[in-house]
Length: 123
Image (tube, rainbow, N blue to C red; front, top):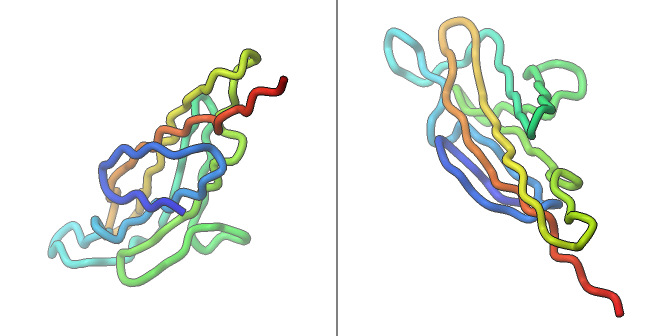
């Protein structure tokens, strides 16, 4: 598993589980600046034109609360990037972002470059 926090860009091979987290940049109270839990926490990620979002507390949501203002979501990159027909590796960008509503709001985004796994030539 690879962990990405804050505004970072990392590179991984497709099939890696990437953890997006607010650990280094927790949700904070807009007035006091102290760590706080939003009324609603949403994690969204986008790969190309495909986007997915999860709400903390919803049935089967992969968003986990780790502490006051701190949440994470694990994203499986399997199948996000596949080699082209000639076996050349391809790359896509996975962008994840946590947002909140209420007292505490957006914490930030992170990008991950996902590259297709190496192709073993067959002879």
